[in-house]
Amino acid sequence: MRVRPVAAAFLSLAFFSVPASHSAESPYKGQERRPIKALSEQEVEDLLAGNGMGFAKAAELNRYPGPLHVLESASRLDLTEAQQAGAQQLREDMKREAVPLGRQIIERERELDARFAAQGIDEGALAASLAEIGRLTGALRFVHLKAHLKMREILTPHQIALYDRLRGYSSPGSPSGAGGHPGH
Image (cartoon, rainbow, N blue to C red; front, top):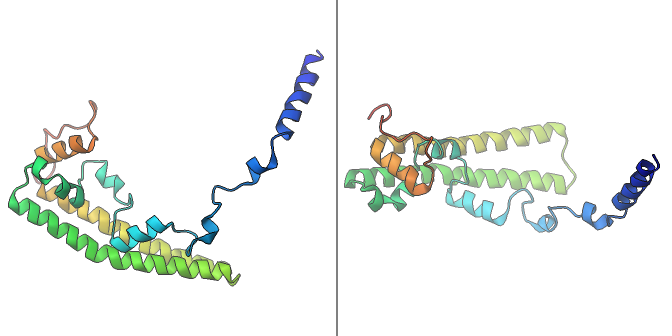
């Protein structure tokens, strides 16, 4: 019976002997020097460029190709000239809408950061700021998802199935595309 108290004492010594630096160091270390704390340099670049940033995964991973990746695989998908032109137009339309939204998100994040830095924010201002950032982020996500919806209308079921395989999404249990989808 003495084994249990001894084991407990040993385990507590092992637990408390862990250096404090392991538990005190934050994974955010160094990020306090960012101009906008909540956004990495890459995130700012992506927002300014109108990049997808994973906003369209619900579409992309459910058989709704995106215009950029369709254009990158145009020859392997055997796109017609009309399909290529349609994909290019979707990409341009998406960027035209996404870039201004990205700029607005960056500015709202910059303002939020500045208010925290100045220690001049209360719950009401925080709620309003986050509601606006959320609205803009939702609008940006809509722009990207809408492009995927429209891209699917341009491609044939065979091209969608091929796109999925080229992107590595197909698996034995996934739809083959043989039955098509509405409108095709």
